[in-house]
Length: 389
Image (cartoon, rainbow, N blue to C red; front, side):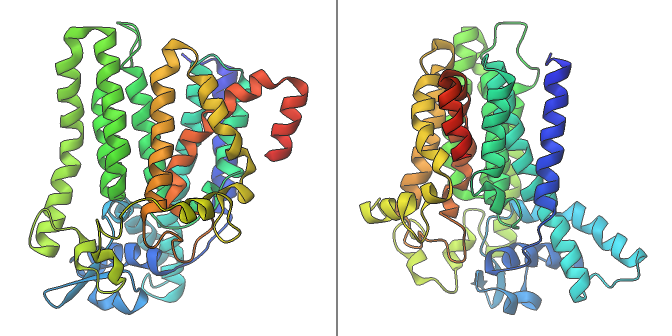
């Protein structure tokens, strides 16, 4: 059980982060509008077709004469209940939900219920894991707040895209996977189900999350096996069962929208012709893209968040302890995957974006390296870290 003071600190941090995200409303854009068009189509017209809203976005798929969102559907589906409630509130206030003020209000609620909320969740998981690994409360708060406020995660917590939701889901799955490795009798109940559930939601919110999800599932299985070998098969079965519901949802959506359970929206993309090369625009990493992603003046991550430059050192320090080695390796692997993915993508700059947006789900995993740096840094080291924050 966490100490009362740790729990109080987590509550204060979570509320502060959520309010800092809720203060901003960045309105629409092609990416946001594509996802919100699917929300509106389901609630207003009871269809997956976004024909009525297709002029609001260029991120759209064309199939059998009808327009659909080209995005993974998870972020839209998660927002359905909050947006339906927001539409009811709008009507009570005398505002038409389909008017411009009504759309602004409901899209704002969709952003809070997905991007803002799950960025807070990811930050709190960073804090929880830092404390569980024996780092000080100050180190845990520093790492969590650095992720939430001193990286572009803050920006994407205020945009109705899929990156922030995916980051939160992957961190929840990662935490559950680590719980499976606790000594017999002390592991969290349902951790295997949680790994499957959260990785499943991550994948149907952003398809590239399938690779980090695989890393996390391997971590979970190895953790269960290391704890008690005979628990390996039951743990794997629970992980698969936990994610199977989201697989069924995705297959059903694809079948209804595109005629095949395996047909993704990007395969019917109307614009962005380079999405039809390689694997939906993904080929192989190019050095110049990686340079621009890290230090470029246009999309460079490190000029925006210099703390990130120190996180590889922190992850190495994290992995020195045998009990933390596998989680540290998986966190580093997930971060490396997203960097290489972004450097392999034709549209690497991400359109209207802040920094390299495709790297956003990697940021909480990198932030895990900040807690060991804080505790090992001494007064001078903490001064440098605070300045970078």
